[in-house]
Image (cartoon, rainbow, N blue to C red; front, side, top):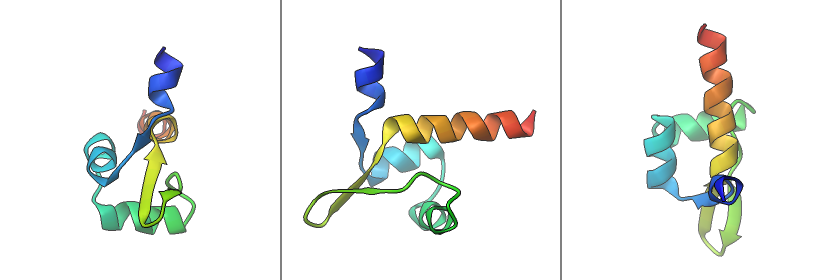
Length: 65
């Protein structure tokens, strides 16, 4: 069940809440290849995979230590 929940798609508000980053900062990092990419899930709708954002957060916390 945990794996299923981590693979859900996150819209902008959820991605901002989990990552702590604004939309602009996430887009800027995404273009540089430093943040998970968005997925087109429908016409005009993009989202992030929760598992990829959680992995990104994990990698960021390891860098600080």
